[in-house]
Length: 199
Image (cartoon, rainbow, N blue to C red; front, side, top):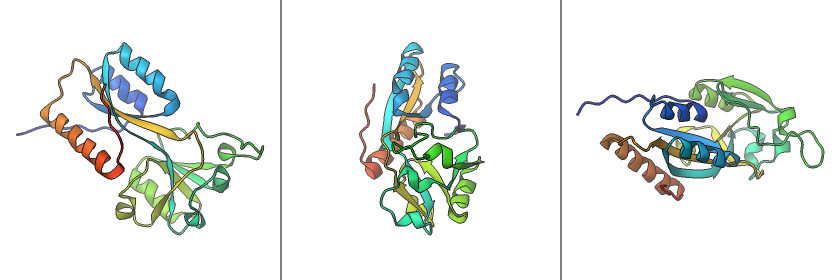
């Protein structure tokens, strides 16, 4: 059976608008925990169905040869003097404090940023350029796919994120899209042991 599939990477706000305007049929949105009520309000107002895929705390990706790779858990002070590699259409992680409770200069005041569009180039920079790092969701396949990188937990309470799959309520999912959701659920369940609830 022939089919056409178009996949596009976009920030979550753009993905939501694409669903509302029927410019996309299905989307996956990622948002910080503090934004959940705002997203739920938008979904109710526009009759959007959402499925919780998973939730997690951001981790820090660094080169396996970086001195920080020997630490079990990283703290804001560990990243002072480091350069954050970030997607060009995103902003810095604004849910981290400008200052630590001790009054010392914290994350935002001490981090330079390198904006890069292509993910493979992002990973290559972190792998090869000293004192660089990336934020990201935990990746259980990291050591198989991204040789030379490690991921570390970060000791901060404001790094909890959610990813939801959304579509318009009046949109009938195709067999292919239903199959995609089944595969996605299998990946999350088998690799991450996370719960999935539908509303």
